[in-house]
Amino acid sequence: MSQNILVTGGAGFIGSHTCVALAAAGYAPVILDNLGNSDVRVLERLERITGARPRFIEGDVRDRALLDKLFREQPIGGVIHFAGLKAVGDSVADPITYYDNNVNGTFVLAAAMQAAAVRTLIFSSSATVYGDPDRSPIPEDAPLRPANPYGRSKLMVEQALADLHRANPAWRIALLRYFNPVGAHESGLIGEHPQGKPNNLMPFVSQVAVGLRDKLAVHGGDYPTPDGTGVRDYVHVMDLAEGHVAALRHAEKQPGLVTLNLGTGQGASVLDVVKAFERASGQRIAYEIGPRRPGDVPAYWGDPTLAQATLGWRASRSVDQMCADSWRWQQANPNGYA
Ligand code: NAD
Ligand code: UD1
Image (tube, rainbow, N blue to C red; front, side):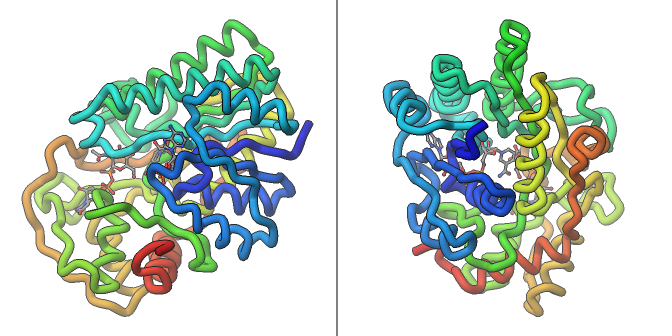
């Protein structure tokens, strides 16, 4: 099987870190990205980390002709499909754009793969497919009830890929449900830089620490959690990246479809993250406890035992390390790749 791995959305946050893990494992990532939510300068950084600049094709995953050409021009051993849109609020405001990118985009990709006889696919799903779960840790067979168009787009793709595998069992598919990916590569050369005001906790906290924002608004201090703030399963993006390599190796070994949680199995509260970031950065993180954010779930974390048993993979980096690596990246690159 070719060592060339097509990484759609490979210029983005999780995709770029996965390119590092792929290179470390001896694969050659080939990135397809429309740069809608990323910066082409990530390629220089990847070259500095890995010693080789990944092949890059600027384009859209919905462009069938481009995909056909890409699969014709070089052997591709498998595909890791990150390309998609991920802002929950935007998905509520503009659902069709979300379904087009996330669902239709995957359909176009899968059809092109089928035509090229490339049948190894690792898909970025999300713990958001569980919605508000009955209990934590959440196992993979928990009820699926996503609460917004973004989450439903992920569930639709999961279901369609399961149908594809039933129709042709030669497919090798991993549906990976990420919990809350945070952190950055330990070099500080690549990381997450959201455009505009961050929606997610860790980028917001980093921007307060570096002085770009005054204070964190803690969305709710009256949840039924140990300190009253929301609890999540934060997972280091490099652990997640290594999980993709493990899933790829597993798929190469045997056809089939697996659905796996990628998380640590442990919850941390908003204030746990704030304190860990203060320890990591030596900066005080000003915060104010405000109202709950509509649509937020009080607390959840994943059960990663199936991923451990299936892939031999386990998240090993702590919340302190997630904060230390985020801080290194944020401090060295306060304006992202600009
Ligand atoms: P990101 O926005 O940093 O990366 C996505 C990349 O895909 C971007 O570089 C963007 O330019 C590209 N892209 C988007 N639509 C495209 C299209 N139609 N054609 C080509 N390229 C396109 O996001 P991320 O955090 O790295 O997330 C990667 C994947 O993981 C997404 O599918 C996301 O839904 C999923 N996911 C993310 C999280 C998270 O918290 N970051 C959690 C669960 C799942
Ligand atoms: C959000 C998305 C989810 C996505 C996940 C990826 C929503 C409703 N859900 O989840 O689909 O998979 O990101 O990481 O948007 N918080 C604050 N102040 C802030 C930001 C966040 O207190 O400024 C709190 C939140 O209330 C929550 C925790 O921090 O308790 C984590 O929030 P966030 O990083 O946005 O992730 P999720 O809400 O888990």
